[in-house]
Length: 563
Image 1 (tube, one colour):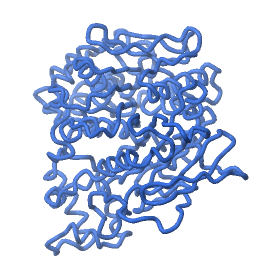
Image 2: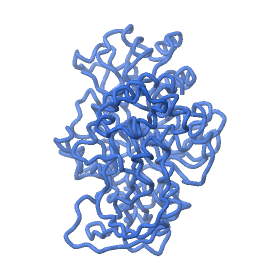
Image 3: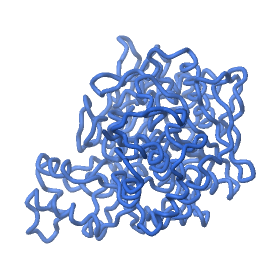
Image 4: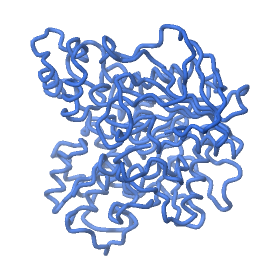
């Protein structure tokens, strides 16, 4: 058995606008390129504008090219009343959703009655390992967080954006680098942010009060925008929220030379090997044949291209070369049960996985002894993962004797260490940072998986009805059979996120009695807020010092990890 990034996620979440009510109005907005018509729902008292184009379709000659801005006026009113297809992806998140190359669209969900005001804006970037997912996914329930923002007197507008995935968005080779068409998925996101700057005012949004926000690969994307162009501030956003993802990548970077064999295999599979310009040949290749060959290729990730991604982010953070805006940055207690391998039967196996493992975070063998000594073969306090299990807990033998030790390391090396490092960098530069640890096991997870990756999403979106969690995706409602405290925690977390988007302060007035303040992260007194539905006040502050030696060893070896 093995719990990986993809087996745990099996499908990821977007706006709660998929079911149109029988009677709805026709809110209309005039944009730079023409007019769009959405619809109104009395259920949430919100206006939905779905499937709004923000770029020219990346098809034909624009396939495998940097995204191009819309350059013409709509001749007719755009009917923005249903989601556009998701970008081509490969994984469980895409089950049941339409896919297309023509996918660069976004959605705007606004509370009704604020059209003449300028509201802060939260721009959601979905996760899915950069290989699957989309804005159609019903688990990204923007309606509820927007509704909560109104309830606490801090109304916001929600936006969700699409971007090209897998080889369609992150193809890499010497040919791709030479043509200047690297990191297309991130450039899609960037163009969407420019579109928001130009057009969100027409929806009643404030272009100067945009927060970019994502989870997993979406949170990593937020981190890439915070460090893009060597930390240049293009005034596209004033804050960032990262849920289980950070400015320092969750993988070890590969370069275009290392990707070349995979690129060559695709070129060969579609019959382009004899062409001088193989990339241009790929643009003309039949979709079905190209889609099949990309689906068979290994995972594609961004590369450091000296342009969008100028350098390894660990170097930039050390030098203060990042966009200095307030952030929320957090992770879940047991991230390592999603990213760690199994079985891990002994220390030799553990060591081998550190050098070369399936989560693509690896380090040269000469650094392993220091890591082994930092992650001791013992069970003191919360050192092992899952954290809530006592040292005497019996786990399935199939996981291996070193499972909990390995999970602690891999959770740290993929997500948690870089969360701590980012918060330290922000604090060192005097920029507000709010750190969290999510520590609530939802319905449907085995005890030995614990509070693993992605589990906070339903709480942040206040998705207590479990939209998108179903048998088709191999999941169940995270709140099913759980006490009311779970729903109360969802309301608190969702409202705290909305509050931060509204005025950069998650500590809104009217929080549940006894709920502690979320402390700002400082070097003198680094603290997380811990979200836990099983404690009296739903949360508590803790010193961010656990697994200190191991996490510090990971941060100190960032260059050896090639990130």
